[in-house]
Amino acid sequence: MKIAIDHDGCIGSGECVLAAPEVFDQDDDGIVTLVGSDEVDGHDEAIRSAAHACPARIISLS
Amino acid sequence: MTHLVEADLPSYPMARQCPYDPPPAMSELRSSRPVTRVKIWDGTSPWLVTRYEDVRDVLADPRFSADFRHPGYPGSSPAVKASRDVSPWFVNIDDPEHARYRRMLTAEFAVKRVAGYRPMIESAVEELLDAMADMPQPVDLVQAFALALPSIVVCEVMGIPYGDRGLWQEHSRVLFDVDSTPEQGAHADAELRSYLAQQLEEKKLNPGDDLLSRLAQRYIANGELTPVDGAAMALLLLVAGHETTANMIGMGTMMLLDHPDQAAEVRDGDEKTVQSAVEELLRILTVVHGGRRRVATEAVELGGVQIQAGDGVIASEPAANRDPEQYDDPDELDIHRSDNHHLAFGFGVHRCLGQPLARLELQIAYPALLRRFPDLALAVPTDQMTYRDSMIVYGVDEIPVSWGGRG
Ligand code: HEM
View (cartoon, rainbow over the protein chains, first blue to last red):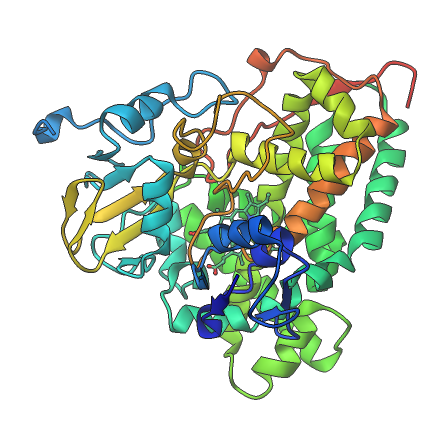
């Protein structure tokens, strides 16, 4: 799955980190980062859950 | 949709019938008129939004403003209105200004950062439970544990002395009571702000390893944050940080005691069970129960209804969190419910900043309490307790409990 993130819109809620800790993390300012690349193999369900949970709706998947 | 004349509009908030459930009249609206006008205390008639998807759409849409200075903003009460007129909290400011304030704090509440508070929270819990075990029964769980824990934690995180709580717990309660007069609200607000401004001033001279010291050093010292706005920020953290979690601990414990099988699973369960139990209690209780207040800055169509620019909107999380289109058996407590995605912490850019901390406190508090007092029971039936219908955060005044000989 390919993940696109609008970092400027991140509010640091941490919902994505809770839903898919293998894929999402927070930087020193609490803003979303990806653990690996933006093309992820597997974890589909957790990634979808993270995108749905994001209160700022800044995670899009393709 | 049938046209309603002014006089027929339902008044909001509606009355609850059972302390655990949202008002039945509101649930009824969710199926019959999911976006509908209601009448509120100041005589205005904002839209009430009750479906899960619609509530999320309102809260995530920048065309709905959280700025109470807007004429159409549907305020919660005269006291809340009076207090927020002073210097607005960032919960009532829109982006991009809101984001500028919020970003000064996001590092403080990052998930892994907050996990570092675990030992502090665990030792606070153990101390409170030790003290409680020595008290003559019945004990008021609210004072002994539910309110004390989040108060200690928010003090530790912010770096203010817990011994000063006499200076802020009562003012904070007045601020959150919709029945307070504007004068009471303004007074409580002014007292809280001056206390916190003084704390920030002291941090400038004597910094410690705490949130307020970092705010003072990183943002107030260089002028990015004025002392007045810094005090407003501290006020928001203090009041948002303790009443909310306190009422979740209190009401959540009551609800678990009403469901002994699920309580046993929380007591003896693994981390995953405890985590999903906490999410489920947050969903079913939704203690911040008054609905998020917003105002449309443009015309928006929502659920087949045309909302005009300037119209007030109340997006009800308690109603959304019981939406049968989103949740199977929404009125049943099911601690194993997966993919909960409840809205008890709100949604959109104002989503609760303290949620990782609140979750951690609850995940530690419920099992520790149930393990320490395996025979914990309510000493008074729930229908004889006094519920806080008039508070911004729903809860109960006193929860007398006993636990027999074991504890
Ligand atoms: C179970 C406990 C809690 C519940 C149910 C809760 C609920 C909420 C809700 C519903 C909002 C959204 C307000 C809106 O959209 O208008 C919110 C915002 C907020 N909460 Fe919490 N909260 C809890 C605990 C905490 C704690 C422990 C803290 C901090 C120590 C905190 C700090 C905040 C802040 C700063 C905001 C404003 C965020 C913003 O406007 O960007 N909360 N909370």
